[in-house]
Image 1 (cartoon, rainbow, N blue to C red):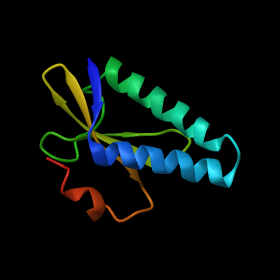
Image 2: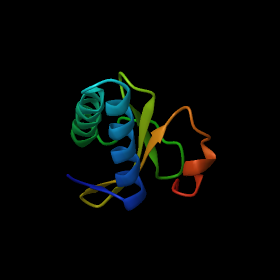
Image 3: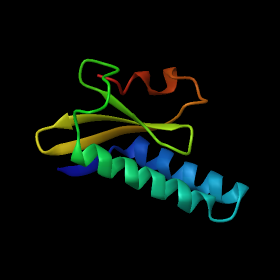
Length: 97
């Protein structure tokens, strides 16, 4: 299955990488590696993660307080949010279906 990020999720991913790299050199790259591993798990087992809406699922990153919110659309995994779990969940509510 192909993966596509909606524009807000692309921005969230970029901001997280930049934030972690500003805190500790190369930590943003470690964040991206964990994000990529989570995407591969989602691709391999797209129905494995719990639903948080009628169609939206949530996959937690292992070493960082982030979750990937996604939906399955035909042969596409659509990433709706790269959500920081320390932020108000209302920031992502409008993307959950």
